[in-house]
Length: 92
Image (cartoon, rainbow, N blue to C red; front, side, top):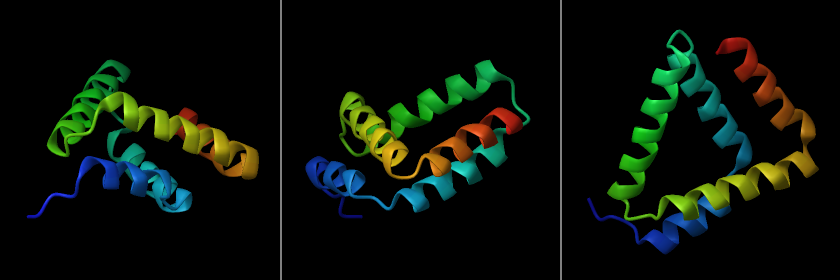
């Protein structure tokens, strides 16, 4: 497989459809909802780091983009971000 360059991945991430991102996030939450918090956090962190390493992305860059996405979307559509937080608090 021809791996995209890190900059193009980060650029695409910054322009990602937030609804698609939220939908996948909901799916992931459903898959882990019965696990203990320490296992969820450790597994999520390891997965995140492994994916960043796979695509040669600095984790801090991906986290900054994700934080910006949340901040921007919270201003545009507070219900969507609030809904995610509510779903997370009920499921985990």
